[in-house]
Every structure is written in C-alpha cells, then in structure tokens.
Image (tube, rainbow, N blue to C red; front, side, top):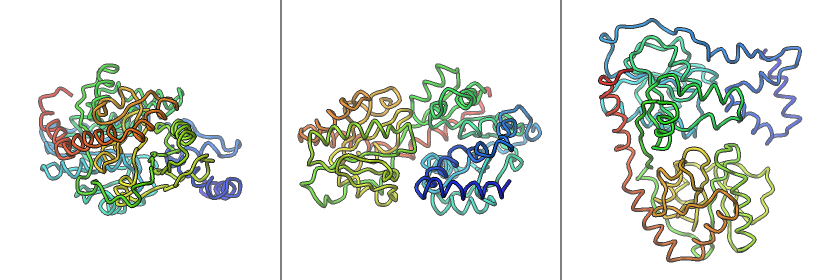
Length: 411
C-alpha cells in the first residue's frame, strides 16, 4: 500500500506540477487521507466499509462509575491538525483557559494523522498554539475515563458517541459542517451528529439557535474576540494609495473566493486606481484581472500591519463567521461582508457594512466606503469600540460555567 501511494504521488507530481501537488495535498489533508484511497487503481478498489468504519456503533472503553471520576477532567477528541489551523487554535485557547480555572484536560487525536506520537503533537501545540499542560495521545484506544468528553468535529463526534467511560458527552461546534460537502453521504453523516444527544458548545449564537431549533440540541454559545496585544492600528506607510483587503482563501469554498473576485473586478473597473491585497492563500494560479498584491499566507504577527495599510476589507462568510472581522476592526480597517443570519449574529449596521451576496451589491458597498470618508471614519470608530469591548477571557468563562453547571443537566 505505501509503495503504491508513493508511486501515485510521483505520478501526480509529474501530471499536476508543483502548485497542483500543493493543492492536492491540501485536499488530501482536508478529506482525512481518503483521496489517495479513491485514486487507487481499479484493481485495488477503495474499501468504503473500512474508510467509513468510524460511523459504526461500537463501544469504546468500559462504562465507569461517574461518582469515581474527577469532576474537572475533560477529554478533547480532535482531528489531525497543522500549524495555522484556526479551528484548532480556538480549541487550544479554550483548553488553556480551562486549565487556568482548575480543569484537567486531555487531547486525543483520532483518525488520519502525520504525528508519530502524542508527545510530538504536544510539542507542536505548545510551540505554535498555546502552552497547554494537557497530555496528548493518538487513537481511540488511548481515551481514558473522564467526567466530560468533547467532540470537536463531525468525525470525532462518532468517537465520542461510542465512548463509554464518560458521564457527559459534549460537542464543540465551530461551523455547520454539512455545508462543507455536496448533498452526498458525507453531508448526511455530518448532519447525523447533531442528533446524537451531545451537549453543544457553539461558536456564536447562529449555530446555537440552528442546532437547537432544527435538531433539539441543548446548546450554549460563546462569542468571538481577538488578541488585544497584537491587533491594533499600525502606521500607514502610503496614506494616499487606496487599498482594499480581501480574505482570498480559494481552498475554503465557504469563504466565497469566486464571489469576492467578481465583486473586486467590478470595483477595479469603476476605480482603476485602487490597489487590492489578497491574503489567506496563494492565488497565483488564478488569473486576477486587476492590480493586486498576492500576499498568500501571512504570519499572524504580520497581519496587523497588513490590515492597517488597507482602507476597506472584504470578508465573506457563507457558513459561520470568520474571526477576521474583529481583528480588522481592531486595526482600524472597516469591514464589508455579506448579509445572512450566519453573519448578523455578530456583525450589524453599526460595526460593518453588509450587502447582499452578489457581485454588484458587494461592489457598491466597497465603493461606498472608499468615496464616503465621513461614513468610513464613523464606521471605523464604531467598529473599534465594539471590538475592544470583547475578550476571549469573558467568552471562555461561559464555557467554564457550562462545565461547572453540568452536574445539574441530564446528559
């Protein structure tokens, strides 16, 4: 199997070229290693039963006496991760806060992973995310009894459902994951996890309401914030050059890359002097028909300076909201985004300019802020005040209270 995959990768490198390989490997990561399985020769057909074995009902661990469990022990079951993963950053931030409040956390990586040991993964977490104290292990078999066990993605929800040695099964939901897929098997496998009876901790009110109303989940929500020590306005280097920032993440469909490019093209046609900055992913494989800077993946420490050089930011969210709007607001860059319940639980007419999700409306909104300086300045002031009033500490405390009150909730 390994030799076949190596040969297949070499063939793909020749066929796709360097950039094509990068994109392929990214999707290989997103789909948990299943693409290579699907690309195996027909004589070695994909093993669907084995690939989706994780959805089967099977007991993991032995039922434990809840009275003999440490009331402040939490298992966090996560999928594999890489440096820069925003979803994992939120998980590890929350774990770090819970540890400071006296909870003992464990991290268990299930499914496909490139880490050889839990210690190796822990070193990466501590170096590139947060210096958590939690032990890190790999595989379902490494799960230990705990008062709480938390799923963090739809695939890990099946593991948590099957784990017997826990009293409270929870689900940290950061987005509506069925929307990540076409209406096929994965869509329905993901949607089924909201009917498992897990207790939901959601990133924002939109998810809390959606999961409660549609699936009857018990939910508590935490809001968003940003690093106050990192994100603040920096010196503008070229104040006379108008710039528009675009969160151009082509590999993440829910960030509306194509919609954004069409909107910016209209802006460029009407105002050819505008310079555009695209960041979030390498866009060099696309024909971008207007003057732009392709910043690609920008390190976190460089983001505040980049945001501060721009007059308007376009950030699209077609599922749950991104963390970027608050970071941009804190740096003095006003935000244009799309309308929708998935956005308007946080963004509104006082802190952002929202438009219908079509190229014409988004173009008009961007130009409105570029030509109306008084409106732009007022929005910057309102948004900065709004953003500065948020904090990760206060939002994380909502989760602390959730766990502290869990004993009174019927699991």
